[in-house]
Length: 114
Length: 116
Image (cartoon, rainbow over all chains, first blue to last red; front, side, top):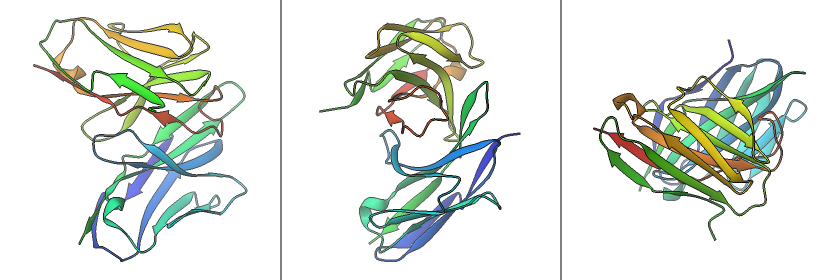
């Protein structure tokens, strides 16, 4: 069964600190993995996308890693800011000859405290 | 300039009513989607349209019917609303069809539907 599991479910850190969010997936055949940021009351916005051959991708203070062998990804946020408070959703795409699917994780709710 | 816009942002209605949610994208994308985000925050695809043609129809009650007058619009009509329909509904678009493509999804800001 195709699944995407994220941990922790929620996280509170102080402004300026770093943090790492985890994503484990059991999706096959794997196509790509994306991290999205969803602010409260808004739609998700894409942060990074990685294919099978890419093991790291950065977008400003956000760095995503991918280990396709262990089927794990992480999102590292450096020097957190109050505006980083949001839900972070891991999304994995599966593609075969007849169909394609996107499977969403339930997200990690990150709160940054001043 | 809002890329994907959906209206209304909030919708409160009674059981049994029929309602519509509108979505428009000005990105020139070929594919549009409707997703439902439940109370546990999982996003689940409902429908996908490519150039006004339905290409994905997940297991959704037939009370839900998408309408695509042109490739920039995908509206969602819901008949005989039920309590379990309460959720946030997101419209999205992407350049390429097929959810496995590398083209990112661009989401609207959601419509929070509350059925009483």
